[in-house]
Every structure is written in structure tokens, then in C-alpha cells.
Image 1 (tube, helix red, strand yellow):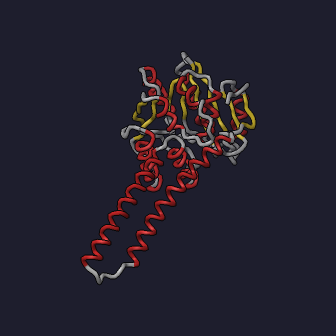
Image 2 (tube, one colour):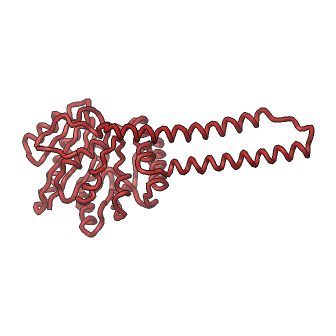
Image 3 (cartoon, helix red, strand yellow):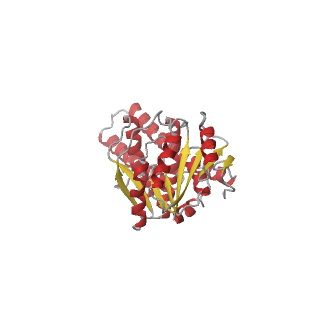
Length: 312
């Protein structure tokens, strides 16, 4: 059996070699498995590309992919998925926060029958902003994509080969891998692990990148937002109708009542806001469909090391 380790790389020139060496030490304890390590340079501004090339030059099991520009972690991961050949594929971070030593705790659950196994960390050393963002993302995936509420999605995971083959059929430029998981299988499990501290640096996710990822999850794998907008429109129409009836009744009951400019303005602003949100949501769906039909690339590969060809 062969294992593939997929590591998207961004600003990790000081940590990547440590992560790779940890994997190699782990695999010396499991000689019954063949393995490969695929490193994807997501157009990192540091010298991580040189680090990847040197490691790949000295070990043919280490393979490198360099993207032409920064396409994001999920697109870089997809590039790794399309180049891997393992029976079980392990995805992890490049900053040392993924507990590599516990990899076979994930694989053991895979061998017991699950299709995808995700690490679940008990303590998260995140800012209040990141914690709030994670909670909103979990709520969004549960409400719109069908994620079980007790299931946690993380960057450290293992999955079967057929899951990779199905995921690679998605070729849209708006990539959200967790959405693909729940469209592919229901056999997803968690393993409780302890997250090690980051070796150096900080997260590469800015507010803009987090929002883009969030919108990909909302709009790329579910039509429920459109149905929610219909529901909101129905509520606003009902409230407007009821308010009109109340206004007529008050006019006959209290003939001298003065019309309220503030209340009228509030109603107009509220309904206009709902209309603008719905219009923007429909426009976003139409725009994404247009861009997808025009074959905007999910990623562009600039060069590879120890890889002959990547199917896309």
C-alpha cells in the first residue's frame, strides 16, 4: 500500500524541511508502506521553491509543483491531488501545526472502513476573530452543505483513493474542498489529537482570503442561499401586507393620527436592503457560472520536479 502526503506551501521556507523530515522519520517506522511527498509552492514570496527543489533533487519520493501565481490553499491542494498516486492520501500543513506523528491514527480509522478521517483538536490557540470565523464557517457548512454538527473539518486529514478521484472531477475556479467531501461520501469521521505549536511565522489567511473562502463554501456547492432569499422575500411581503392592513385600521380608528415619516423610512430601507442582498446573491451566482463556462483555470502549473505529467 502506498501513502501520498500532500502539503500546500506558502511562506514556509523555515519550517517545510522540518515537516518533511518528520514524515520521513515516521515512515522509517512503517517500512511496509511505500510513500511519496508532494509539495505545492503556491507562488510563495519567500524561497520555499528553492527548498522544495533541493529536497526533491536528493530524494525522488519528494515531488514538487510550482504554481504560476497564488491561487490559494485549496487550489494548491487540488494540484497535489491530481498528481498523487497513493492508495491513501494524507493532507497536512506546512507550518508544523499538523501532528505528523499521529498520522497512522488517521490511517487506522480509514482501514476500519471510513472514507475520510479528519483531525479534531481539543484546544485551539486562535484569536477571537479566528474563533468566531471558525464557528460561522461550521454553522454555514452544517446549514448549507449538510455537515453533521458534531463533525469538525481540519487541514490534517486522510482519505481513500476513490475520494480523490471523485474530487478531481471538480474543475471550477471556486474551490472549497470540504464541500466536495460532503458531496462525495457520508463516511467521514474525526480523531481527537493534540495540535503542536506552529514552528514559526503566522497564518497566511488574511481577512480577504477568509471571506473569499467563506463565499466559495456558501455559493459554490449549494443552492440553499437562493432558497433563503425567496423565504426572506416572502416574509418581507407578508410583513408589508400586514403593516398595510394595520395602517388602514388605525386610520379608521384614529382619524387624526399623523403619518410617521421615520417608520416609513425604516420600512423602505429594510426592504431595499433585502432586495439588494438578494440581487447581489443572484448576480454572484450568475457571475460564477459565467466565469466557470469560460474555463477560468483552477490553477496554473509553472514547473514540476519528479513529476512526469499531471492530469487536469
